[in-house]
Length: 86
Image (cartoon, rainbow, N blue to C red; front, side, top):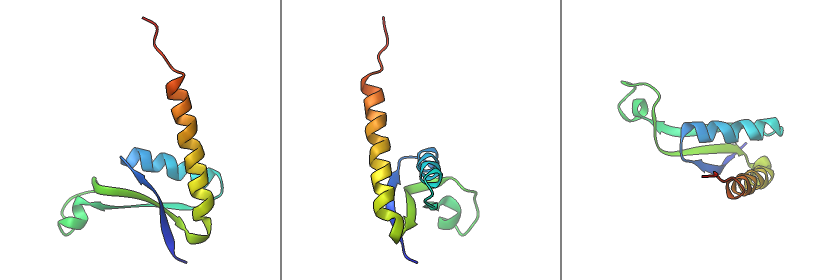
């Protein structure tokens, strides 16, 4: 079955977090990105460069995007309501 990108992550950790959230909701997800090793014929390990994508099966994409949207809205709300007293 075809996979679709549902999220562009800013880091591997960001991608792993979204992947984990989706999998906890019953949506299998994979992370896809270029690595230095892929660009240089496998000479180096796994550091990722460029766009880091979270992919899901096409039939799960709509629900996955909805879940991601809800998570992002929740994170923004927490950020807005968090302050440091001086």
